[in-house]
Structure formats: C-alpha cells, structure tokens
Image (cartoon, rainbow, N blue to C red; front, side):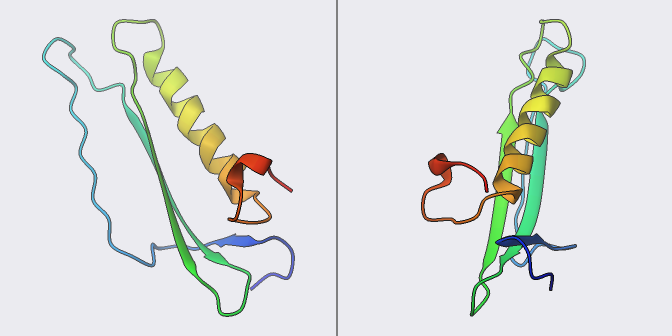
Length: 93
C-alpha cells in the first residue's frame, strides 16, 4: 500500500452493492451517470470505504449526459483526495 494519501483506491469493492437507473417515460436514452469507487483507508486498522455517486442527466437539456458525467467524476475525484473522513466538507488535502 502506498505511504502517501489517506484513501487508496482498490480494484474491487470491499462490500457488495447494486444500482438501478431508468431513462424515464419520455426519453429514448438514459442520461443518468453513476460512479462507484472502492477505497481502503491508510489508517490502522484499514477500513473499507465505498463511494457511490448518481447524477440525474436532466433529459431534454443539451449534453445532459456530459454534465452528469462531469458531476460524478468531480465528486469521485474530490473524495479520493481527502485527507480524512471526519469532515469531508473541509476539503481535500
């Protein structure tokens, strides 16, 4: 495990999860986006952390799927750079 950073991303989740999204009754495609990231803390003993972010694609607006993907990527990247889980609102390291 690397020495730097508080959270270390893992290849597979340490806990089971499931998700479901629906395109709705009007749209042809589903613009919702999901990011699921699994981490283990750098503390002793290490703790598993699962992050799931779902963004509504705002169907009917131009590039709703792009906005949704940008949103989930931004949150997931921010979370992966945290220095503590005690106060995520305090920001990244």
